[in-house]
Length: 194
Image (tube, rainbow, N blue to C red):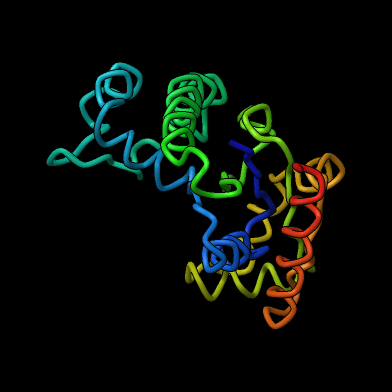
């Protein structure tokens, strides 16, 4: 089973590009959503060991507590990633193997594809790009965040390095160009993976 990784900075439109692939019958693995599910099921005990009982309220992950502890302490964040990333990797492997030859390939969507090591689990990488102003506007609208908060999030991301490592780049400054851009990538992948 061939696997395409899709990554890009916040507000670049990764999910929109993934929807284009999904409409063409390509299964999409959303690593962020699956990480949240795993953190609320099979990873509860190791997360409680890292963050204490406050890590969960009424059986649900206390994201505010996790964020306040982890993002102010690089060592704790590293420990959290060491628990979550391998679990997501194994989950992705099991998920992708369930398709057999029924689909031409599957997609792993991850904002931190390279930072997490997930790039080693895919055969090619597509980077979704958009101008900074477009990314800021999209994120502010989507999250209700102020400009300063979005700019800080963008500044922390390593998008230039990820873009340089990618096999394909789609510029997602306007959604009306996406369908043909995705079709073009699919044609190139089919040639590459014959």
